[in-house]
Length: 162
Image (cartoon, rainbow, N blue to C red; front, side, top):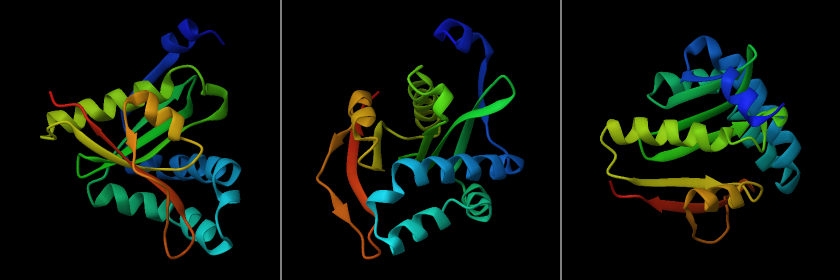
């Protein structure tokens, strides 16, 4: 599919609780494929558990802002932001990768966060797989960390004062 055809058929909207199962399915599938193999078994289990449908519903209920992208009636990507400042999830389904969808989701979430009072400072705990994408968005990494359960992440920050 060409980018122009994709853009004509894509929509990005605020997620609702009924989206939680589809969001969870996408997150778990992509995390298992691209991230979990680098983690300890305990870390992979913890990370994947944090992406189950009930967890997504809890995040939504506690104020995490989720946006979903749809194309041709299917979930193409998802982004969530905690406290209008911490990018929590950003995943794009494989058929839609490399078409600018991650950037479109990021710009949507960033705009919503700034409108809600964020002065332009954002953080993310990136996987190794996603560091290049976040660097392309302007985030700067602050070294690699491993938490007690073996989850690897790279803390990154973006200052885009408006």
